[in-house]
Length: 140
Image (cartoon, rainbow, N blue to C red; front, side, top):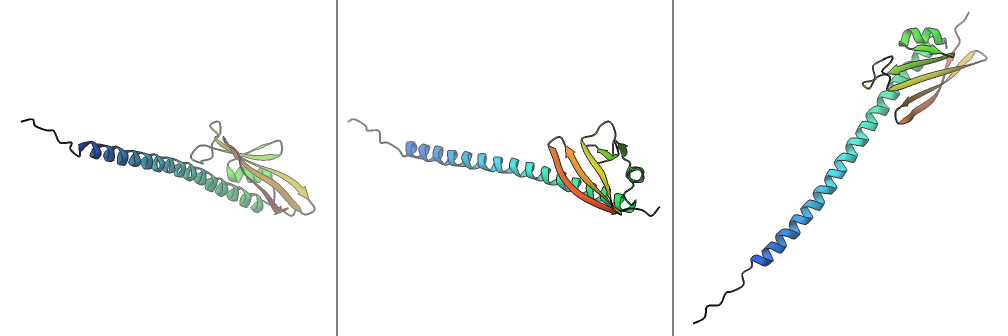
């Protein structure tokens, strides 16, 4: 008597296993892409937060000094170049010269009793922020 080989369910099981593995790999790829995007957004957000903090500090120094750029430079650790305050920061946002990654520039424009200024923070990605600041001139 001839023995018959009965087809088992192994073939169907392998197809199901391959299909579910493919879905899992696709979902994992999407999740990894989302995590990378979230990390990029987080780093950009941290950079902007630190730029805003540095700009606020420089603007407050500028206001406290009555719009005097030389005095503001002395308080902030920056330097004066062509009548503008320039403060360089390293990658960790500490004031640095020579190894500048970010640069804050405050250009004053005196007007009647006021000293307005344009404050910009730039980095390797270009301009991070631009503000208009003002200070009452110190009585002379």
